[in-house]
Amino acid sequence: MRFLQNVAYEHPATRAGLPVEQGLIVRLPKLLGDPAWEVMLVPEELRIEDFQAALALWRWQRLMDARPVGHHPTEPPCRTCDAELDAARAPATAGPTTLDAATRG
Image (cartoon, rainbow, N blue to C red; front, side, top):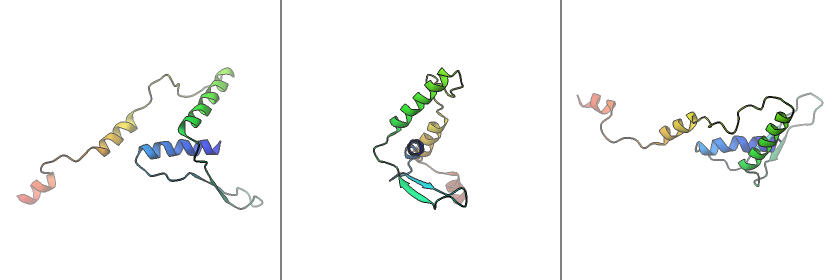
């Protein structure tokens, strides 16, 4: 499941323009007697669709147990982040800026 969680983190990072070359999972010991830390590569074959399939199964299992399932996939997703990304990627407008006007006077 940790591999799928990593894939879920990679997806928004990629959409935000952050380069993702390889997913890594670093396991750290929790107790003194636990094994030393280790690093595992996330298989490159895993995609966001794999995470979404696991999420759909998790929601179905919870629904069958009459437990809350969180956000319903039929609801429109939150687009706040997309709007912020679009604004950040928009090209700069041509013309004088406030700084230009202040330096000319």
